[in-house]
Length: 363
Length: 260
Image: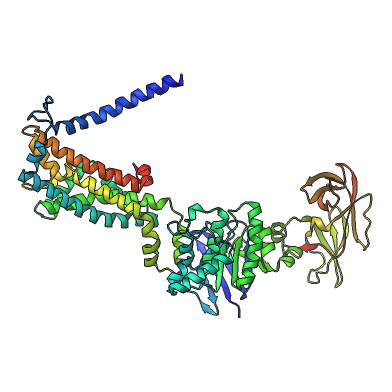
């Protein structure tokens, strides 16, 4: 049985439907992420799980029991807020002890568990300090310790890394993964950052305009986006207008604008004649001067010219214009040091990709 | 250039503050003057304070004022705190208007309308009780403003976090909300006390005959002549008020700054 079950939940604010019929299940021990742009309904959904808001329709169940009419303080669910929401008048220790005090745990036990929780987030110093005396990263750790100390069934995290600088955010990502593994508590994580979601989650629900667009493991989400929104939102992707020419069990054959015949992975349910987009990731597109040579067969090839490039250190992204004006991006790792680029603007190149990559999207 | 400008600024500031404070200083100074007249300095004495503490009417008025100020500030702190929290939590436009109007309204208007209300609507005999009600009426708004200002600067999710971590609404108030607004509540109480103890206009209209507070007593004394006894009682009142204001501004500097 799923730990948390969300059944056809709808939440409206006036004319605006913030959450529009969401159904999903979160398994025990899972690191589950709600991912989407701001205003997609992910925070509203989180607030309903925590108990700060009620659904207009549908139901939320924890361990098979409805959460309806159960106030936040009686739900075994704790939240790590985006602003950390530490109690400014209480010290680090008192903040972490708060949920235990509310649960009427014995003082000696409180002390032991607070120390344990602080150790688990690597914050054993500054215990007597007040929140305003801590750095952003330290506040984050206190908020995590406070959320975990009473061992909730579910820990909700509302963009908890949003306020940290890039380097600290990466460190905290690794710590979050380890922490979740060690404590074994189910995490429901809300973020608008696809990179964060991909790095942290077991499963991700991509939300848009109140609906779940796709729910999948990170690699499936990235590799097989179900529609244009997901393809566009998760990572970079080339999208080309295409029509299905033949739909077999071993390959999907497409007519792609500016490229011609393209072979892709099979999508047997796709009928011949369907119009849509062929999507392929820049790192799946090989690039070469004159022609691309490779060990395996590359079924799809097309000629073009370098239009522009973007050097970001580890890789360089080349923007290539095809003969009909269509533009494609290809990515090349810079494994040889000291070279920003292998091609000059205007160079004729060939792009190629295998029949095993890319996806046809009809929505 | 800049030194000349700053010299000018200094001179202006000193002039303004002199204008404000020299009259007060004179009142204080002449309360120690060994003469019946506030005209020339004769010599130092504490006689006027001695006279003051033997003046039965004055002592009675002082006792009335203190009693009214204590009760009015206590009641209006309780009501004002609740109003401040309500104004913060429920974003009703009409609520702040209702609470703050008595603060903004001319005192004379409030005094007259309370008088009419007490006499014609409630059929109340004017006295200490009507003064008390009147003082509570105008103090509530001040407390509410200070408490709300204190809440306005706070992260709303703190209160949600308390609920989220297992606190009931009452525990959330007792352990989180109240400790956080306490400086504002104390500042509001001190302001209410100060406003009550030196209020003249509203008290004048609602006290009726025979009941005197300090400001009313001082007024009736100066109708005859300004004796140094008035200076002495004014000095004491001023010291008390000043002390309370300093205390209030220490406890909730942000509240007083943003709403003054």
